Amino acid sequence: MEEIDILPTTVYSFNSESRLHENVRKLVERETRSKNRENYATRHDLYTKKEYAECVDWLKACVDEVTQKLGYACKSMEITQMTAAIATKGQTHHPHDHSNSVISGVWYLNAVEGGETVLFDVNRWHVSPVRLDPSRPHTTDPHGSHGAFSFKFYEWYKYDANGRLTPRHDKFNPFVVATVRPEPGKLILFPAWLLHAVAPNLSRETRYTIAFNCFPRGFGYGSHKVDY
Ligand SMILES: [Fe+2]
Image (cartoon, rainbow, N blue to C red; front, side, top):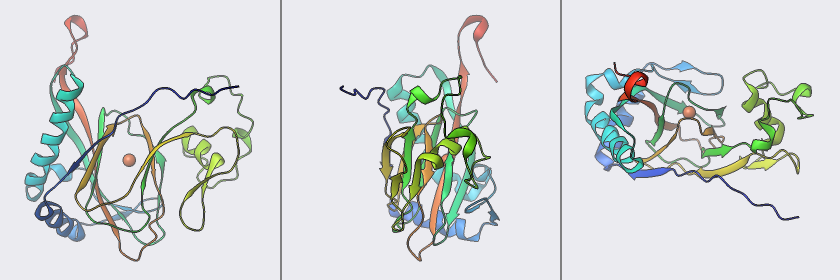
């Protein structure tokens, strides 16, 4: 039997000038952070603070380029959330997607060992509304209660001692689309539905990123038009 993998997804990458991400990293270091399940996050509306205006302009220019490239018919693509994520040694971020968003972005403010963004999709045979997956009801994983995809991810994958993703089984594997290494100033833009996780930060250096989401303004036609 031959297996044919289909449904590719494009992720777009940009690089900022070092002055820009270094300034933002200093701003983020001063922000109040609160504990997430596995790491720390700041408030979710950093894009509204005037000290971030220059970086918001740059992020929006990158988003506009992708919006144009994809030929999306909308008046504009607006940033609707912007948070700094902070991970100290050993910290991760569980698998998730971003609801009520179209384009999502991660902008790396520094380099760390490990801490890769893992972009993945599930094998669509296992997204059936008929619950055929035998491992589903049996999880003992502490992250299991946080949604079906995260549930499946930890059933199927674990991080080894070196922070690398290792499949637990030969079957039910999600597709890992890509792993993206944190590099200072690198920005990736990806569809908001694309599942992603953060591998453990293996260095003593704290990992700083800006994560943000975008939603279109002025789209659709006729009686299906959405404008606000
Ligand atoms: Fe995310």
